[in-house]
Image: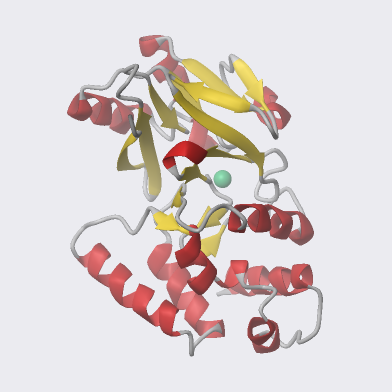
Length: 255
Ligand SMILES: [Zn+2]
């Protein structure tokens, strides 16, 4: 049976998301920004929390773990490289590991850069990936603990996933990301279409995610650092893509 998901806002602009396996009843929270909205989503769906899959150690992704674990006795999985910074971890996972949520199965992809041990959970069979703060809709996370080279390599790994993979990310930043993207890629028709669509979604009170890999390949400047027109737009024609990526990321930080 296919996975079901429930997306909801947490804190100021974080997303919480549940993934549910109808066959077994297992339900995982991807990260735990805060307990109350996750509890509300569990009540709304009637699902029972069995697992928390942590993408990285930041407090706005882990702040709800202690309260949820106390109540639900759920299993907490976390990236091996960051387990010491994450509360109440039961199991650590790394690149190539398989994570089971009931009968659902996720591959662990290491996507460092935002943090040094950041991971993405890819539910290949369900065409879903939970990318935390690595890949956003039309954007990417800040490179805080890694290097631009590292983040570019992580984004390329995600770009290589099947095009119809739905991407869930940690924050609702899409409109601001689009505004920035248009500043360096103003003639991109797909980006213009995405801007119109996202504006309608936000006006209607709807989330702009999930997005897809195909959509991001067309619109996300951070995935397009190896496109010659993008390199030229930031004054780095012919330069290595990682350098172009670093320049785009630096411009976004100042934007
Ligand atoms: Zn973060």
